[in-house]
Image (cartoon, rainbow, N blue to C red):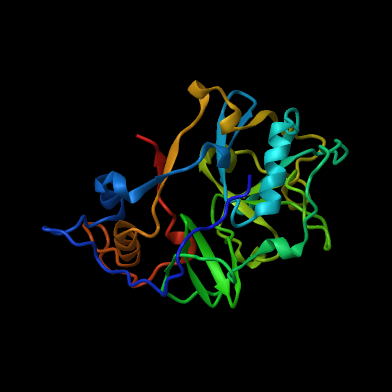
Length: 297
């Protein structure tokens, strides 16, 4: 199932404060806690996978099918085929990534996976109706940045793409022209490696259980791969949330990035002045303004 982006193209939206009868909350956390239900949208279960690792810990990943449609379609097929069951987290590189998949690279892939290419690292703005909440601060890696349908995006001309922020999930690949199938995935566990943007497909983000990846022992091999003397972390199962029994399905919401509440959230992230902060920064990096996600009430 591939999602489209039925949003109206908007010019840079001013980060104006929300109207209120009294002063708004002074911190992003307070704003999130007091935000009304209308400021949130439900995340579809078919956009989530639940990865269970040895010991029962779970990592929940949200995918962005509109931003990486071919790779996400493959990931759904791999999850429905239970392909990751019995594979492992086999690479953990400090301040970089935790990667999982088939360490032998010999496990047969399910039939029907889509062919991918470097063209899948971005999606075109042309012929799409996008509601873009712009982030009006300089970015070292893109002429423009902002938020679309709950996701941070970088933009250059007609191209838009997901950035390599902390917790974001990309597709492992070999040298070009290989663009990866989606069978090898990694999550960023360190400072955002934005130099990878548009060189690898970014397909989603970890929204729960990130600590289970970021706290793993680092691999001593090249690029953080576990060596023969180290034990990769076994993956028990990976399932689409929509394929789980109703009682086991996770339910999450993300803040509506077109809402006045989100604009106020961005203003507060860029201008912290509360009991702790003495000097507001007057700006915020794309990866330092994470879209709020919460369990669905």
